[in-house]
Amino acid sequence: MSVAMSSAAAAPAQADSILVVRGLHKHFGGIKAANGVDLEVRRHEIAGLIGPNGSGKSTLFSLVSGTVPPDSGEIRFDGREIAGMSAHRIARLGLARTFQIPALFENMSVRENLLAAAAEGHWAGARERAEETLALLSLEHVADNRASDLSGGQQKLLEFGRAVMRQASLILLDEVTAGVHPNIRRIILDAIVRLRDKGVSFLIIEHDMEMVRNVCDRIIVMDSGRVVTSGAFEDIVRDSQVMQTYLGRPQ
Ligand SMILES: Nc1ncnc2c1ncn2[C@@H]1O[C@H](COP(=O)(O)OP(=O)(O)OP(=O)(O)O)[C@@H](O)[C@H]1O
Ligand SMILES: [Mg+2]
Image (cartoon, rainbow, N blue to C red; front, side, top):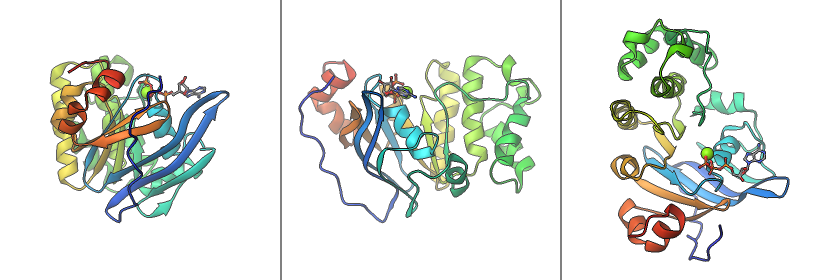
């Protein structure tokens, strides 16, 4: 889908942005999954990333987190150019992401999964932090269960918990509340807000507009591999073209 609309002019890079992406390109064969992405995530904000299926949201996460190398473009995280750096190095710098399909150690317990995330990054205080994370996400009662025995929603919680354990300053969440029970969704929302209040910045891919409205400070809309607009939820919703074309929901 490609619709002509006034694309947001690329704002100048701001010192208060923790992430600045400029002119990011990535093609898979003939598919331009990233076709000149420009966006920013400001410090201590929860930015929501929305857009139709296949618009390049998860690919953007893979490019930013280093699991897929970009063809061209700039990615500046906390003032440092990271485009093309290994995923491991980027994670060590303080950028964490979750996967759309949870990437857990299925044969390990919930607690061990949290500790493993710390072992891949910052081990200091890991045991205490694992207990805090179990409490934050109401996972204490299943701490010794195998990850493979968790419900789908609990697996999403644990995937989120693994990102929390990395002590990141920027966390990218890929549809972390998709298909989960409202109780677990509430736990995730509360944890996101609490972590933001402690100084963590978030970029979250989300299809649930209620969640976007409740938690996001700013919305970024993608289509066909690029950012087409961004702004406050109310302004995005008021733009009926965005609502109809990109979200399939007429106002
Ligand atoms: N590793 C890959 N190899 C080939 N094509 C890919 C690869 N990763 C993504 N794509 C393609 O790139 C485009 C963007 O995919 P992406 O997963 O980033 O979209 P998305 O916005 O996250 O969609 P969804 O909302 O369905 O999760 C799609 O056409 C997809 O098929
Ligand atoms: Mg996706």
